[in-house]
Image 1 (cartoon, helix red, strand yellow):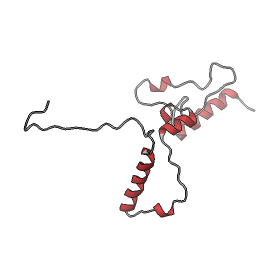
Image 2: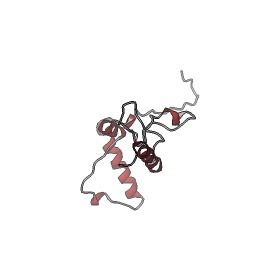
Image 3: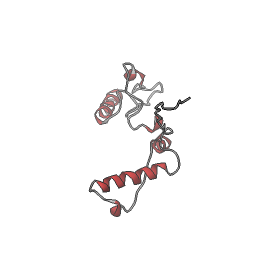
Image 4: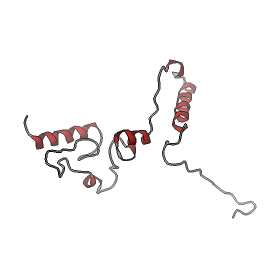
Length: 122
């Protein structure tokens, strides 16, 4: 209950993600408008546009929450929670941001090197 003369603060919590219809497109329009206000108006040069959200990436790739780098790498145990490069199925190997050692181009390249060592020469 708020008493007379008492200050209050409210913070609107956005719903998780940009998966609501139209929200991602309106946000993309907003980004383009900000660029225009800052002197870089490219809106008349856009011939085709595809707006993709983490929800779209999750549906298209099966990645957790649409994360392009795999699961979160925060925390002391995060590195040990990623799946190993050699799966329990013989001949099936895992490479990429969601597998050991993690996300980002340098680590994905290292992931590929690990698997190449497991597979051996062609």
